[in-house]
Image 1: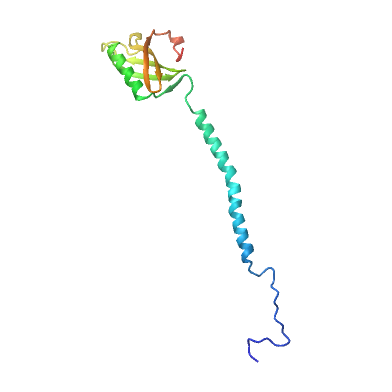
Image 2 (image 1 turned 90 degrees about the horizontal axis):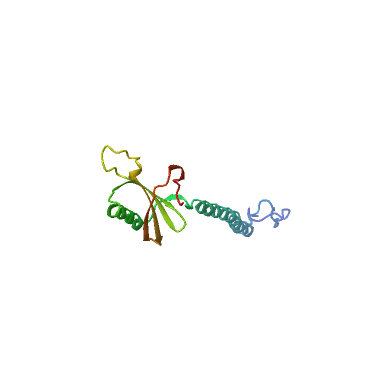
Length: 153
């Protein structure tokens, strides 16, 4: 009798222990289900993140009366207007976004070294009407009193 042949008393057990057998197809099925399970868990998180990011971007957009950086053509038109029309060079400039136009607060260089920078003669307010990125009209506004010096009025 060889070692590979079972004894007559010993029968070959053809049933497998359910805990120890390798279940190739069940493992494969679990792996494919786990991939789709990750997608099912990740998709709602991704959608919530996209909605939050879109909300943050929307609420960070400049509103009426917010200080903004205008297009280069608008900024150049203001510098040209100040040099050619008002004959003054600009020291500080702030653009405010209004409904269809820019309101500009300008502090010009003093004409004499002894003059105060905050002197009303050195302050200008402009209204710039624009379409897209081009300037259609620039108006010099009268300097309002300090308590009423608010953009877009």
